[in-house]
Amino acid sequence: MEAVVLSGLALALALALPLPSVALENGLARTPPMGWMSWERFRCNVDCQADPHNCISEQLFFEMADRLAEDGWRELGYEYINIDDCWSAKQRDAAGQLVPDPKRFPSGIKALADYVHARGLKLGIYGDLGIFTCGGYPGTTLENVKQDAQTFAAWGVDMLKLDGCYSSAEEQAKGYPEMARALNATGRPIVYSCSWPAYQGGLPPKVNYSILAEICNLWRNYDDIQDSWESVLSIVDWFFTNQDVLQPAAGPGHWNDPDMLIIGNFGLSFEQSRSQMALWTVMAAPLLMSTDLRTISPSAKEILQNRLMIQINQDPLGIQGRRIVKEKSQIEVFLRPLSRAASALVFFSRRTDMPFRYTTSLAKLHFPEDAVYEVQDVYVGKIVGALRTADNFSVVINPSGVVMWYLRPMALPLQPWHVARQQAPGEGFYPALL
Image (cartoon, rainbow, N blue to C red; front, side, top):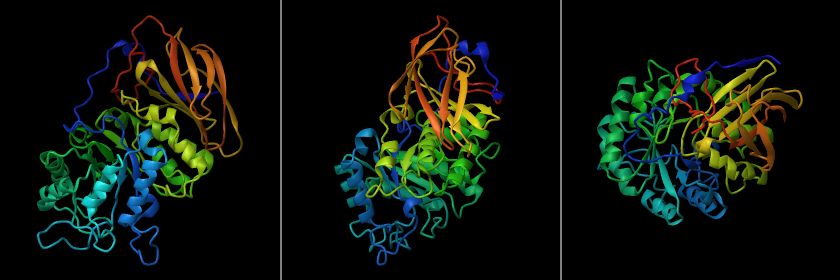
């Protein structure tokens, strides 16, 4: 079985972890944010006369807050209710302030924030660093940055997503750092999500991830997700093709954001839904659902509420995983090092024919010699058994599906293995023994 195994750091892993890169000094988003966002499922539907149940209105957000609070989501960490585009009136008020659409948000954003906070949740809102938002609503041009930050803080907002439609590269280079300063100056803790890199191609030299990590808590790097498997695959392809640049940029307080979870909508099969959840988790991605929580199916809810999956996603080390094997058989293997010397492995099939039996060993995946791990299947939940590094094992992976394992060390070698947070391009990536 021929494999392309990405070559590695070898004995250099005995070096200690480098200090994490400097994050935005607001102390927030120490693990990837979790919650719900309106955009992918509900878009810019503002016709509340024809579609009152699904239009962008305070009622939609009241109802989603109720679902997060009452259906077990909040206790698992899903705490943000995030308003996306199309919430505001078409014009600023006489004082130049942003105001919500009076018909669709008659109570105002402050009342919505109070409602959300009373349920133990947090409220996110959307802005755009341009003349208009992407949906054509008033944007936050440079002269409005400070005022809008103060408005959001006064309303009790807990997260801001700042988009980049209708703005130039020069305006973005000034405006995104300026908004970070303005949010901090309000004195209110507000998680800051930037779309800046997505508008600059997502890669160096146009994107400087060291600077970005000092400005933003999370950032959109790439295209908007759509309700299709093709869209999920395009995001996965881009993120892992460019993992040498993207993986070192992530860490506590500053995360890559591959966009929303579309599990529970219309475009993904059961296997594909499990794959998106597993791959987003191995990427240390924010878990922002965009689905109708009022009508979500039991199977989609079970995927999104998987406790072990969420524990892995929220691991305090905050190391983003990498693709470590790409087989000619269209099987790929992903590894995420976790705290307490644990690891997550995802075996992913791009095949479209039938379930595939994949055989390998932890040794082939560069786990340390003479170690023994307890293996737990993340989706099945049960303990698979104890596995030595040298043991061959097989997993059966369904088409477009995954098998995901959580590996806890039972016995470790004596040498002080470590995983380096930042690798140079082309260098490998191994499990952590910390």
